[in-house]
Image 1: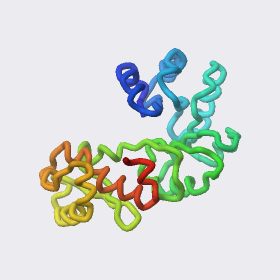
Image 2: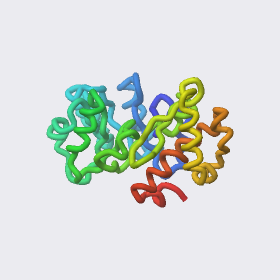
Image 3: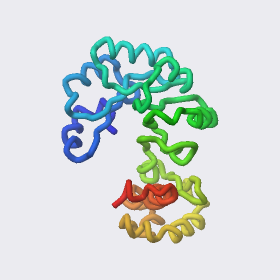
Length: 231
């Protein structure tokens, strides 16, 4: 997943190192610059989202229409504000690829995800925290894998659900829990070449890899998709 404003400098080096490259407009992007970039760089990416407006179904539909009028017929629609109503306006065909955008409120987001039809391929935009809830997406992007190092917080997979774990000053009252988690997932730590003491010392490199060991690996094992995602 590459945001348009970073694609200028980085997309060429990604092209040959990943199976698929997925471009999004990104936060506070310029719609016209995004569209101007999409056409001449078509061979550099596999998927691209339409330009969308957070929490605004009507404006997002207007953006999609403009792209289609420009001959940009390959961008993936993004659902905003109300997934079911948006789909009624889009009228997608079975197996179409559609992106899941923003609905205000986590409970409402979860409820609307539950109602999504099963005959579409869905990409969850920043929907990593919903992977274990209600349905499996065809694909998704998430910042969860860098959260421990960057924001000193990560999700830990326990008892078929996620729980929050904090580090550094934020996690000073969770050291006993952290010790227990690290012991529970010591095999995963070894797979990821993570030393327990480095995690306890808030080592950046260790924290950068930690979500893979304590969240993504056990989650994938629970849903029997480990072999599809790890080798």
